[in-house]
Amino acid sequence: MHPRYRTAPDLDPKTGSEYASRRHLLGAAVQFHLDLSFHLYALLSSGMLDEFPGVQLVAGHLGEGIPFNLWRASHWYNQPVKKATRPSKHDYEYYFKHNVSITTSGFYSTSGLKFCINEIGLDRCMFAIDYPYDTIEEGQRWWKGVDLPTEQKDAVARSNAIKLFKLPLEL
Image (cartoon, rainbow, N blue to C red; front, top):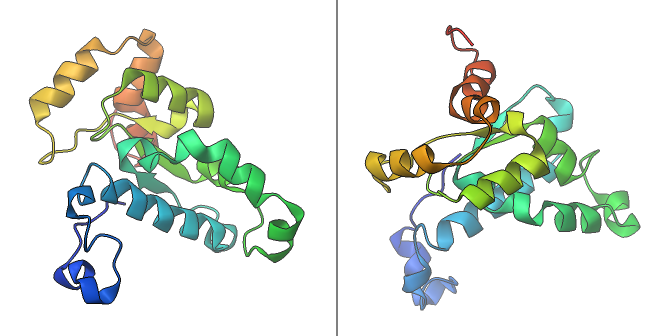
């Protein structure tokens, strides 16, 4: 899953778009993660993953910030009034740990990656470069300096993707 730039109708003040008078929020800095995280929350709560539990989703940019809000979103999603009316059987945390993997693309933060590993699990995190938005060199430079145990770094860099995408490569 990847966000998109807004189109001309989205930017027309007559449409009431939140971005019409706030164009400085467009793109990777703010709009991308807000739009895609909303879409991802909607998918996770739709019941689709209960009907198709084998579906695997991949979200870039360290999961569009959702792992950092996962406890709170799940906590409130589990309140009786929400639980009684929601279409999904589980909360967001469950689906993130069973059906969603994230990549580092465009989010080169070592502390952020470590948080995500602790929050959703090592097997759900993969290295990626957000080209053409970021340069390959920028991603490589950051990755070389990431301080993780060798086994964890190998999993994020390679083996998690091999397993998820069932690639014909040796682990």
